[in-house]
Length: 254
Image (cartoon, rainbow, N blue to C red):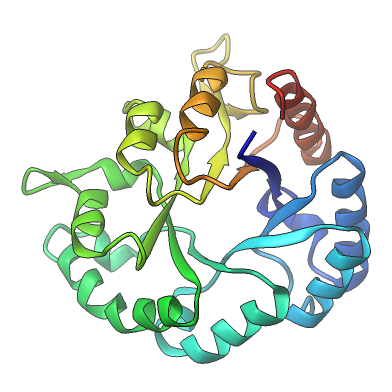
């Protein structure tokens, strides 16, 4: 298998706010069999050197982040340095900032981010944009995500495709995996199920309605390196949700 399964620590955000809790959490994640993680919404006291030291302690590699838009735009050099400390090549943005969601403003995203993304590329790293369902709102006949794909080359902008939000937007995850084949070194694995009261909720991987055998087969044909399990909202303990996802993915050979 070319794709390595990891954990998106946003799932465990309530347990990563201090160095002590971050240590406990990474220890438990490593014990589940995860060897790569994404840092997102960790506490400010978990500085890049501390995060690297703790992850190294448990044999876990930091492969992706979600960083604040202000840092990406206005503190790019220091942000790059922080990622060098963590040994992390992929610098992510978690969602489209509100003002750029307006169809009249989306094209300004390309202009505003051009310089920072060039700096990130020139440092040997890659900016990763994480989609939600809102990115499949059509403005002037195109999805918002299409504007980004047309505005930036693959070495300037990657896409952290999220299986749950693709399904929520009623688009085919495999179709978009194929469309973004040269832009998805990192993806998010998250399932979607329907309850008895017709509510659509997030679920551990392979506990919902997304065909993950089909998804993983498609990812193996792309440049994907890291498939990071994420579950923003959990019915069970978020630790248990990550454990279930990890065990289920083993049945597919991961």
